[in-house]
Amino acid sequence: MTIKSIEKLELIVRAADDRMAQDIMALDVSSLTPMAEYFVIMQASNDRQLKAIVDSICEKLHESGLDIKGIEGKEGGRWILIDVYDILVHVFHYEERSHYNLEKIWADAPLIDVSSWLN
Image: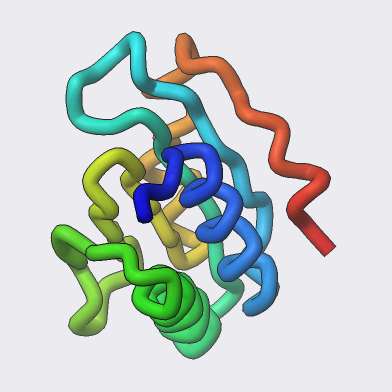
């Protein structure tokens, strides 16, 4: 069974929302970079929540039979990157997100409306 990128995106957003990730946004970067179809950017209010969000996303992907290409920054990082091949998930500690400001760097990327996937 293959899963479409948009379905995988929904799974990731819902998993992050289950652990109360804040300010979740998804950018369609498909026309801007060959790296990925989507970037998902979110933040956590503390280190424990950051780990819980990452664990939730990874768990839901595995339950759905989806592979994770790699995870960077998990060992004490305050910006964890989950590479799911066609989607790059950026989970920031809230203090780091504004410093890196990926939303501004990728401002040309259209926003995906994820509001219907959030509780």
